[in-house]
Length: 145
Image (cartoon, rainbow, N blue to C red; front, side, top):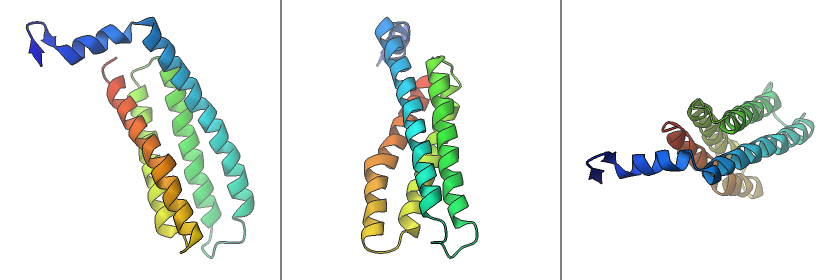
């Protein structure tokens, strides 16, 4: 909706950006992303230890661990930039979302049939895709800061 002074959503977004509650929420979300990155790093260690010798492709476990390391880097960068309230949060969040989408795709597409495939599908729909959507929304909102 347009008003004589501009778009209402833009005006409300700017109003909320300086509000103490919005700033506190951003900081909390930033810290939550950092915590998730730490949890994902722990998962990388487990993945690295359990996938050894199970893959028929050279460096297969390194590929998976590398993908998760990139996700950790994306979440750490996004969280750090969000805590600092930087507009660069948009770039980091978009990159992290992309990595999550790639991970979901490759997990589902390379999983063996049966339980492994259902687990990959559940992780994609319950964790990776919702997180990617949230990061895209964050990236979009960070452009308006």
